[in-house]
Image (cartoon, rainbow, N blue to C red; front, side, top):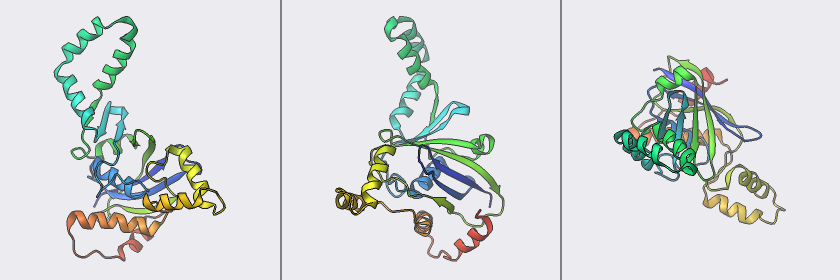
Length: 243
């Protein structure tokens, strides 16, 4: 089976939070989203639905892939009413002209749904995809294609390597995450107990290679309803592909 080895990096993290994953080719952007979510501490991937909005920015092809239904409908409305939007540019007040131009430029970007488009063509051609999750905390990831594998035998993504614990949901962006970690790690911090309790309620976990792989495998099991999965597969995968 053809597969991709990709590196997922969280921009702005220091030290860098990253994961290396092998996943079958032919995956949709929804599956890539699920893989990123379940390789970190976020809760917006399968089996959860719609915890926060997300989008993949395919800027080389002027396309966005998102679960934002409003953005999809806006783009469809623009395509059907281009003459109306062109007229608006000619009649809008001068102080609003720049805003209108930028707004229409964004509407011109093609919007696709993540469950209907596969990653193969863009990833192989451009090698890099930008992913944004939670437009409030504004987490930005870079997904880079490192290698194409032709003999991957398992139908699910597998974590090969990675470093650093990922942020929990609703922590307040990168600054909030590092402030949280200060309190979480230090028993003498005045907010340590509160942060430990909040972390537990948020399903926060420190980076755990085996735990992530169990989760990725469980997703595949649930989606395909397979009754038997060979737990020894991970040793085979790691020996062959891990760097």
